[in-house]
Image (cartoon, rainbow, N blue to C red):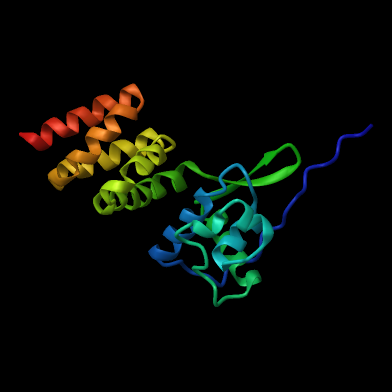
Length: 190
């Protein structure tokens, strides 16, 4: 039995797009983060469009901050913007078996880390005390590089009102993260 061939995709012509705005790049990267290594370009377009597609809703992708960012655009036009991101080395296509998946390039990841760190820092700053436990659990899935950026920002901005959250987070954090959280708390207390 012959193996099925990889599904090849052809990227759209993007020459008419000179440069995307920083906000657009950030929104596309944020939407991509939800599906990295799990879905492809079509799903990314659906998130950005604000699609009510069964799979989008089933996987709670409608909860993504970038969901519906391009709600006024046609899906074909959004796909061109996603292809621009691929052609300009923010995202790339990687194959899981025969299926093409969206993943960050190294460059795209470096651009995205501070964007995501800022989002997570804002969550810490605004979390009500009865929501802290859920946020602590969410932080267990956050990349260590992003965690370090967040903690550095807390120190730099002298956000001592985050100490209560940091204490709760430290208890459930992985050891390396807990050590950095402890360091952050000490810096804020001095």
